[in-house]
Amino acid sequence: DSGVTQTPKHLITATGQRVTLRCSPRSGDLSVYWYQQSLDQGLQFLIQYYNGEERAKGNILERFSAQQFPDLHSELNLSSLELGDSALYFCASSTGTSGTDTQYFGPGTRLTVL
Amino acid sequence: GNSVTQMEGPVTLSEEAFLTINCTYTATGYPSLFWYVQYPGEGLQLLLKATKADDKGSNKGFEATYRKETTSFHLEKGSVQVSDSAVYFCALSDLRNGNQFYFGTGTSLTVIP
Image (cartoon, rainbow over all chains, first blue to last red; front, side, top):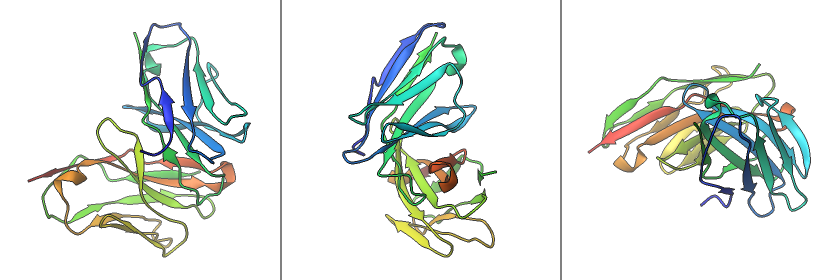
């Protein structure tokens, strides 16, 4: 158990809908990262927050957004969903933003868009 | 830019065989390098890491050495077990961009008794 929790575990929705994925980092970790894992794209970094502020942006679509709250949990919002958004979404956390910091991954949320 | 290239899988080995999974990287600057393992239905777990050239990371019998001259971080284990069956990901961190991780495509390993 990494200490990172994600809810829900599974999500099934329809095209055009909007969903919210939630992540709670390990106790004491200030950084939260979101990744998308799909068969064709592999594991792609989406976005990072550090202590409530956006720190780095990767291959995140404009239809997607995220935020980190004062209690350090984070939410990833996916809107106008398309079939191609079906994937596993992982959250990870680390203590800071040092290049040597280990990222600890949650169990993931499997999103299926029908 | 940054990228990680892993050997293509899947890899199938008999128990007690020697394992090598190749990983090479391209990076600007001096990244840290990581190996993560993903068991079926689970998230990624850190297996080992190395933060500077010539460092050797090791854990659970797995080893990898950070080779700056060949830009490689190959994963090795002397004697694999059935329980090592999983997908292995090589990754590098980009300190200049918020510690963003770049992952390889993953190598699936199956160990048969």
